[in-house]
Length: 148
Image 1 (cartoon, rainbow, N blue to C red):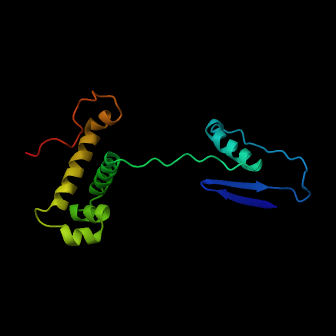
Image 2 (image 1 turned 120 degrees about the horizontal axis):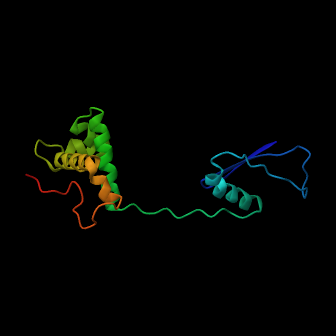
Image 3 (image 1 turned 30 degrees about the vertical axis):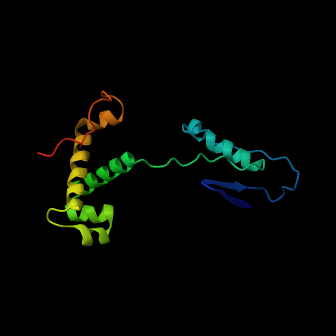
C-alpha cells in the first residue's frame, strides 16, 4: 500500500506493508547517495510528520524593489539575446495592456526597457561583482549611470 501526503511544500510518499497494524514498529530506509547531506532537512521533516508534528516551513521573504529590478533586467537581457524586439520585451515584462496604452516612440515604457537592458548588460560585463559584495559597496550600482 502506498500513501502520499502533502504538507504545504513537503510531499511524503510512504510504501507500507499490508500486514502492518496499528501500534506495530516500523523502520525507514534512507538511500545513501552523494546528495544525502543536502536531503537531511527533508528527511527530518518526514520524521516530524510521521510523529504527528506539522513540519516547520520558513516564512517567505518579501521581494524588494531592487530584486524586482534585477529580475526584470535579466529577463530583458535573455529575451534580447534570443532576438526579441524591445516592444516584445515590454509586453512580456509589463503586459499587453500596458504596451497598448503606454508604448510610444519616445515614451517612458520604451525608456524603461532600454534602461533594463543597459543595466543587465553592465551586470553581464562585471557589474554582478558589486551585487555579490566583491566590489567596493560605495560604487554606484550598474545601470544607474547618467544618460548621454
